[in-house]
Image (cartoon, rainbow, N blue to C red; front, top):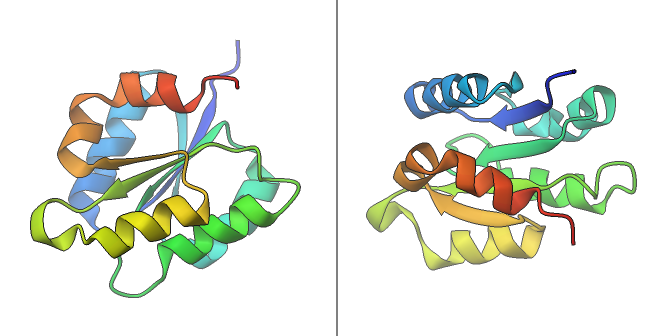
Length: 127
């Protein structure tokens, strides 16, 4: 059986690599996307089962990348788990923007690493 592919959008090295390792432990193939501006093209080419995107970026608008992914007919079906920064960095506006952009779920950094399997199950439920 082919391993499902997950795209992981991140800028910060530590949580990004931890997430990739956890996904690989759950038998996912993983492709890192370090530039959110390439997310749509990468998803169109790679055809992933889901996308995990860290919302905290100093260089790019990750919510805009999620929105582009969800507006494109060829990729709009792909579930997106948005990862919000912890504490004061997790502004209500950022969480609202991620949901408005089309994120399937929004979870905190600590929660996503601790409960990744449950978040994957929830995001991949067929409606």
